[in-house]
Each structure stands twice: as C-alpha cells, then as structure tokens.
Length: 68
Length: 568
Image (cartoon, rainbow over all chains, first blue to last red; front, side, top):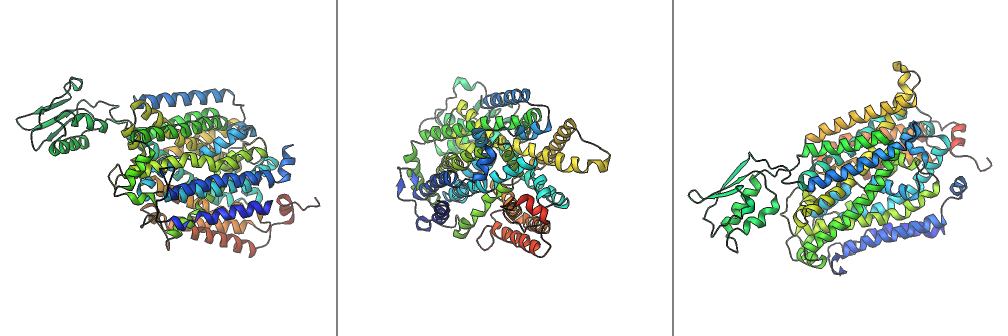
C-alpha cells in the first residue's frame, strides 16, 4: 500500500502541471469556475484523499506504540 | 460601525486570552508548549491558522487580481500536497523526538542532533530575521485592511474639500440627511464638502442630480471623493492596535492562549471568508454573472494562466516554496504541543481541504475584482475595497474581523516563538556568561516577553515605512525558510549528516538570501523564469551534502541516539 500512496502523490505532482488548460478559461465548471481553477481545486481534494490513505496505511507503527 | 465591530471582536479575543491565562500553570513548559496537551482538532486549527496569514487572504486576492487563477496552483494546491508531506514526514517525527528528549524549540533540537553550540548561534539571527519579515507581512496587512475598511470612522469636521464642476448640475437636490456637510455655490460652480467621506457615497452623490448624471458631475464627484479625507483609522494606528492585542493575550496565556485563540480565529476567518464570498457574489449578481462579466471584460485573461501572467517554469518551481513549513520555528513549536503522535493524522488529511475552502473564494474575488476595479490599483487593498464596496457596514466589520483573525492567528505563534528562542536558546544557554546564574521559570517568561516586545517594536518601525506588497515580501521570506529545508530533513533522515554540513547550508542560504534581497522585494523576481528558491535550495543541499561528506561523520553515540540500530 505504501507504494500505491507514494505513486498517487507523485501522480498528483505531475498532474499539477496542467499545461493542457494553460491558456483557456473554458469549459466553465458549475457555471462559474474557470477550468484551470476547477482542476486545481480537484488537486486539493485528491491530495486530502491521498493523505488519508497515507495516514491509514502508512502511519509508522512506532508512533502508534509511542501513543499507547 | 465597522470599526466598532472590529473593536468588539478584539475585546472578545482578549477575554478568551484572559480566560486561557486563568488555566495557565505557572511553568515555562506550559507557557511555551501548553504542557504538550493539545488534541487533534486544536492542533489542526492552530497549525492551519498559523500557516494562513495576510498572505493567504489579502495577498492571494490581490495577486489573483494581478495574475489570475494561476495563483491558486502556485501556492494553494502545491501547499495541499507539500505541507501535509512535511507534517507527515517531519512534524510527527519531530514530535516523537521532542517528547523523548524534552525539546522546547527548534534550535534546541538542532543543537542536540548536530551536537553543536555554534549551529544554533548561526541559525538564531537567520531564523529571527525571517520571522520578523513574516510578522511584518501580518503587521502591514492588518494596517492596510483596517484603513480600507473604516472610512468615516472619524468625522474630521475641520476638513473642507472644494471641487469646481465644469458645467452646472441639473436640478441638484442635497438631501436633508447631509445637513451642512455638502453645499454647492452656483456662482462659482464649486462643490464643497465638510469632513470625511466614504467612497461608497459616490452613488448617493450621483443620485442628487437628474438621471443619468452628466459626465461633468460624475467627474466632479470622483474628484471630490479622491481629494476628501476618508476619516479611516490610520494605517499606523491599525498596525499598532493589532500588535498590542496579540501581545496582550500571548503575554497573559502563552501557548495555551495562543492555541485557543488560533482555534477560535481560524474558525472565524474560515466562516467569515465564506460569508464575504457569498455576500459579494450576491451583490455581483451571482457567481455565474460575475464570471461572465470577467470573461467579457478587458481582464478576461485573469480566468487563465496565459499571456505573461505566470511562466510555466515558475509554476513548476513554486513547489519548493511550501517546504518552508518544515523550517518555520513557530510551527515546530506547535508540533511539540500535540498530546500524542496520532493527533497529527487529522492535520495531515484536512489541511489541503482547509486550504481549498480558504483560497478558492479569495482567488475568485480577486479575478472578479479585475473586471470591477481599475488596473494598477494597490493589490493589497483589493479585498478590503471589494468588501467595503459590496457589503453593509455590519458585514464589513464582521468580514474585517475575519481577515484580522487570519493575520493574528499567525502573529501570536510567531511572537511566542521569538520569546521561546531567545529565552531557551540564548538566555538559558549563555546567561551565565553575563552574570545571570541559574534562570528560573519566572525569569524565563519575563525574558521571553521583553524580547518579543523589542522584536515587535522593530517590526512596527519597519512597518511605518509602508514597505511594498505583502506577496513579494511573503515569497522571499518563505524562500529563506524553504532553502533551509535540507538542515531539518537531513537531521531526521540522514545518519551521516553532521554539524559542518548543517552550518555550510545555513551560511549558504543566509548569503544568497541577502545577496538577492533587493531584487526580491522590488518586484517579481525570477531566475531563468524559475523561482529563485530552486537555486537557493539546490545550493543549500549541495552545501549540506558536501559539508557532511568532506568532514568526519557524527560520533557513533550520536548516531545511535537519533538512528537506533534495530537490535537496540
């Protein structure tokens, strides 16, 4: 699972550089969000999901032991 | 009214600080670290509130006004990925080491890890310098926001402003509610205003003549509003007030009051940010209409990253800026306040979402403002002007309180951290050389307060010179912190890293940061279209690696302390 999480976070870093919508405002998402801004809002939501996977499956056992 | 609401919010905050102070245990451990007792939600709120400052609200709106939607990708979405990585990989590990070895400050950790007294002495002025610039951003932002939001707070009855109207207005009727504030001399065609005026009264003045108002009348009204005093709370007074409030609650309640105030203020600025967005959006005719108006305007490019707004390499290399959170000394101290390591989990996951909730509305307001306000306006005033223009006085006050909450929720941690660094890393370590002897808890807290007071006084003096934009100042400050990232990363993950590498890294960063300071603060500063942090970070990394490999490795007992063998 650790490898999946790392791959997901690296994929987000690559997808962050969305050159394909660089010069375009359209399509306008939900009628008001220019596509570039909508895409990056999606990156933020996806980052939260990726980090949720990270803390669920990759949290160091040593830290859990320290807590208990 | 607006200023009254802001004062009411400040009073509430002081009450919270005093209440937290009653719970303060009389020890320096509680004053500086809240006895390591902070739970998940408060940790999230205090860490998020600390990372979001004038830079996030005032700076992001102003920058989007100038540079369009790409500002979100530059800072916010990169931060969602990188900040959480820092909390996960560095924050939780630092907490573990801090709990095990009793660290109170970032410098005490570096002193122990690198076993060097010289390294903290080198780092102290560098870190304090960067923090002062960080505080300066908040101080300047608060002064400008209060000034923009409080026109007509003072009547300034002695002031008289006269404007000659080039053609007599048709059927001019001055409502009785204006009293003798406004008069028109038909003989000389002179319009005279007594006292201050809110720019929002432009519509009232237009309505005093036959519709539609003649261009000569509109021009005269515009001239009158520009020339007349605004009667706002002066910039310097706004700065001083905010510093004083934060000083009071930090002095009274230390880290416990700071964590409580941060939680409260983070909730306030998130809620008020959304309220401001909804109210302004409503006044603009809805989000769809506002975007359509932008796309039909000369500023349509703001809905893209095209033209010369943002370079592609700049966009890519901005990813290094959020690494700065790993080296913020005030965040380091917040990490140490957690009750247990698992309390970091909520922060790691929710931080990107909190960023989106705060930044998306600000970016939209910034690009919509580009279709509303003339180009070339001071970017730092854009949010304040949009709020003042499109909301009632009550809402302006509440939203203003929200903006100030964001600013103060960073300043408090920074004030406290300066006090901790000076007390724990300078006074306690070197006080004996100046005849101080053993420093007790009470003396530690007093020294911390005195140093913070002096640092704030210096910051206010710099702030009085009305330095440039909040955004360039913030970026250069973050560049410095981010470039020191190798020092903390190597401390935790590279066994071979030693004090010589760390010191080489610090000296390299300090030298390059000062070398480029003028260029960085006078406008957008790129090197080969890339963010300068790319080169500073590369140089710092090379210095760290070369410095460590070319000198003897850390002694075995030090390596064992921080990288225990599996057998042990």
